[in-house]
Amino acid sequence: MPIQINNIPLVSIVMPAFNEEKFMAETIVYIQQQTYTNWELIVVDDQSKDNTQAIVASFSDKDDRIKLIVRNREPKGAQVCRNTGIEAASGKYILILDSDDIIRPYALMQRVSFMEEHPDLDFAIFKGINYDEKTKTINENRKWGVNPHCDIISRFLMANYPFGMWNCIFKANIAKNNLFDEKIMIYQDFDFLIRILLQQPNYAFDENSEIDYLYRQGHTGTITSNFISEGKYESTKYLFKKTMVEISELSDFENKKKDFFGFFRLQLEKVALTGTSNQLKDFQTFIRSYYAFPYSVKLSIANTLLRGPIMSNPRYRRRYVHFVIAILYSPTTIFRQLSRIGNAHMAQKEESN
Image 1 (cartoon, rainbow, N blue to C red):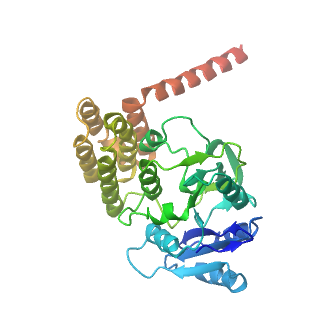
Image 2 (tube, one colour):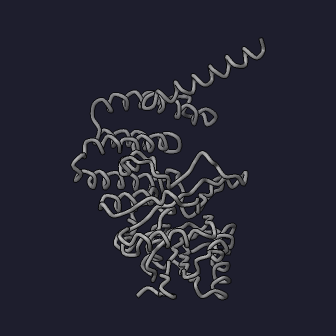
Image 3 (spheres, rainbow, N blue to C red):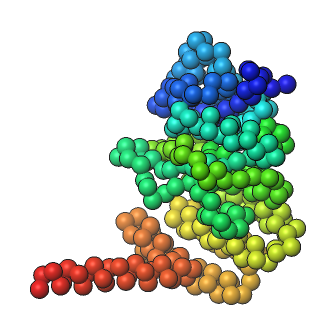
């Protein structure tokens, strides 16, 4: 049974870690500074090669709410670490954070209070914002957990997430009954959340909440990454196949399938940027297995354009790939950018006159 202190429920914070000695102590201190004190922190280390385990152990020796588990089974990765932590969690509620996350001192109090006030909810979503590690500044233009008042499943399928798992607090049974798919090496949060959303759970955005989570960017994380290795490339195809089967049960499958092409398009761009020529060819064939005309026409054009000397030149490859994908699939974006450039040029010209 979850531990209660004066009717205050226990919250389990699950955190995978790998070679995160730079931020580990800082992140643990953020949790210790919470105004809500009935929590347990379960750090599942992915067999780090640096001092991550020693740092966690030093905190655990002084604070029995902090627990260190070292991954002791295959496969390696954040998905297994998260599952290990979720299975070990004792709380009524579960938060899933990363070892470089920044949370405000009121985060747990805000989230638990909302759930206790709305006992019918399976999970709730709170506001977050991007934090640039290099400049030490908050990016006001990228906020998370703001209710878009539209079809949330469609937004996820288009790879335009309105929130991540870090913005949420889950009832324990929701997380325990929807463990991470251990075959998936990237986009793990997408798979975890889309499976839950497709079950039509009771959830809500706390639209009156204060921003309580900062998503750290601008540094190289090691527990997860987005580059296209062969294993990660194949795992993404597996994820897309699985998701396509899951959404095929929906009454508006054809519309959702169109939405899902947004994610296929994003992955096509990533493969073109960092994958091999064989992967690029294979992924276009993979897309055609789900999307026929008119998608196939644009794919044929892409296949022609995403070859040649420009693609082998690292200086121009990134800009060229972005340009080709935008022209084929988001031409209005190019026109808006050209319009801005033209307006800026005209403004400069008028000033000089």
